[in-house]
Length: 354
Ligand code: GDD
Ligand code: MN
Image (cartoon, rainbow, N blue to C red):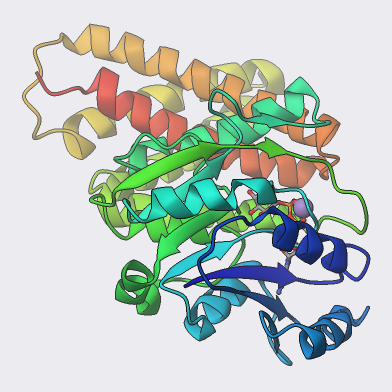
């Protein structure tokens, strides 16, 4: 038996069609159940499902009264499910229900099966190339933490064996959107297969993706970085010290030497890059045996800082322009993105162990 979980929040105009489409698409003779997990939606999505479930025993629902959140809804759904194989898909019809048969047969041979937009045969409908870039870039940030080559680690369309889920259920965070990533972080030994699909546009209702969801994602990466990369903490402390150095020099040069603040800033930026470099060289990565010269490392470190600045700037622009986020949020997200890039490029290039 397999179970399909449909998390819902205000999906009254989509839920019935999505359920019907899923039922029509499944050709497998295996028993299944569809479980809608609704967070007591104000539009009464649960009531529609309640009526459907009276006529059709494969349709079940959970109405959560005091909880909100996509990941935790999926976890609750998985916990209630009776199937050996657990699937999740969005209720708004954006995923591809015709893939369930294929995903089921693949899941039987794996721990997880993941629907991907970014493999040959997969695609995204109605997104500009910038929007796709933002999404792929966000996915890329999680790469250093994943041992499997997964093209769409933020997919909301996947299946997992119940035994595998149960093993890790109590460790899952449950906040935010990125349940799959959270599962992937639990082990690097999962057997996984990806199934390409076409991500459709929403026909009714609204997406609940917000800047908070993006922050949740970045915090999750941050948490993972601290847990799995022992150099990340000293590196962050050094980065923070750079902020103080930068501010101090900017203030000092402008106030006491009467230099124009923009020129002071250029000097302040370079000096803080150098102090950051020195601290990283003699502290963060000091134990590494390096064959490169001190000067070449300094040069590389400068270059990486320039790349980070570009990443910060580009993120600020793209998120503000194409996702409509407030520029302050976009910038904070840009800083996060730059931090990860900065860390990993320095770790794997500037201070690479010979
Ligand atoms: N129970 C519950 N509680 N369901 C929720 C909540 C919540 O707080 N927030 C969202 N949902 C449900 C929606 O009703 C919908 O069925 C599904 O979760 C996805 O929400 P959307 O708001 O439509 O997300 P999206 O289209 O922007 O992104 C989706 O697709 C991406 C690509 O696969 C999500 O599944 C992402 O995680 C995924 O990356
Ligand atoms: Mn959606």
